[in-house]
Image (cartoon, rainbow, N blue to C red; front, side, top):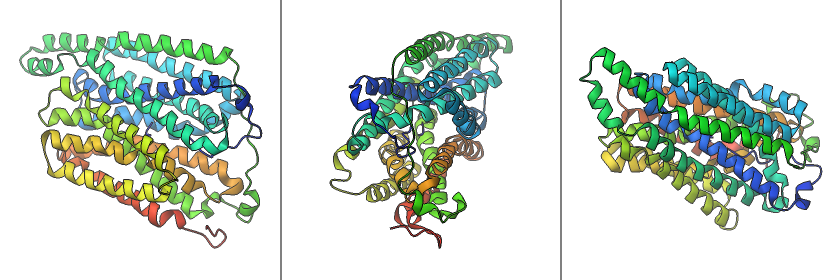
Length: 435
């Protein structure tokens, strides 16, 4: 989440104004989740693209994910402050505008081929997304009957992952066109000619990001001027239950949930952002590899559909999380011991394994927090920083070993998720007895 994750249960509304507004607000939020997905999963193309254009090693290239996702950790509290001042609707507009500023920074970054400027633009985009998600996620819960909120959550996830499938194909067709031939040609050019070729490659990103800027500014204006119901948080019905506690750290199942969110987002981002680069390392052309992130996103979409149909009718969320974690271990092992398209396909299948994790981890982690629910939700959002650190660790290991062997870090992450699904969500303190 990766990237466009839905904060189910982070705040409950005092009223349900969205029920009188028809489907219009739901469509608007759906568009926003599409934007989340499109901007987030362009990283899967930017990693191999900037690796060539800025002449980076693996560790340096995965600073793309780090710069983007670390914003969730650094900007979580400032985002909450901003939303308190602006309200949720204006906060969504502000988030889009901040994202547009981040996209604008890509233009001078491309003109000068300065990697630091690219990373700055990515951090600003991540900041905008942190604001935008914090503002828009509560709407998913209130825009309709609470009984069908889980279905709306999954539908928003589908919007997000459809965009995630489209974005790498669109951006890859522009930025990675003839990239394989260019990589070969760079080895034969003089230094001066090499600089010219790399500058031309860097300039390819300018037009797509001009279009992204325009789209974000238009959408920000639309959100600002249309009418959407404002969200007002109600008191948590379990407030009395949690009143015996003096600290959020007295809820060990939440602390385990934060760690679980951290590793989950890390493996989701790693599966989506690394697969293009990994495919190329397996001897597959970049012109083909650019489609692999779409395969990962397709796996997630299939998982969302399964969740809509089957939870809780046929199995509980705890069971879904357990099975998902086991599948994650299995696919990771096969990715390590196979080669070529088979190994790449196993990484793509991690999308299926990851799909039901966020909706399952979140409610298990905040269960029983009562009046601590808001701060618990904030800690879980900060756990999204796993998307910054785990891919970076992968890049470091890949430089020491290789891109395939570096996937070994997936296995302990999925084991942690499995532990949370079976025992971790049941951890209690003496003052907090979960049922």
